[in-house]
Image (cartoon, rainbow, N blue to C red):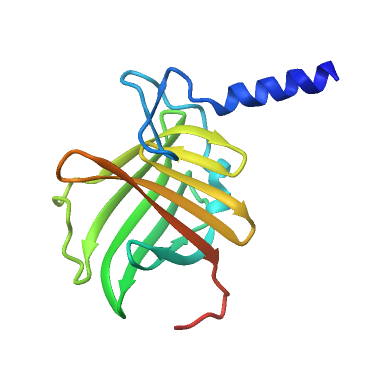
Length: 177
């Protein structure tokens, strides 16, 4: 009984944000200024691999994650609304300074980049758990083998921050739309 109580106490402590983390939204965190990302290898997020489809931002969202190779995973994201492509993202997660870093670039449907040529968005790893990876402002969770959620903190022009949740399902290998 005492062992179970201690284990439950440790699990509760591990699930709470440490002083090195700051809550952005219900499901997203950021690293406090000067805090370091936890140690991690690309294999720690290999569970992201696959073709995922779902809903978000008022349309159909889709992510393709490659298998880990050479310390990196790559992804392509696209949003389709009313049968038309809205925007795309190219995303990488790579080993960086003993941890993981997510980097992404946005593109309009005609592949016009949102960021300048040599610029990209970067998201440091905040925490890593069993099938959960929290990057700054973005949390991926493998709910089960067929379901993946992604929570994203989105800043408004007025300085507010809202959370958008994407619920993905593993797509069939032979699915063609």
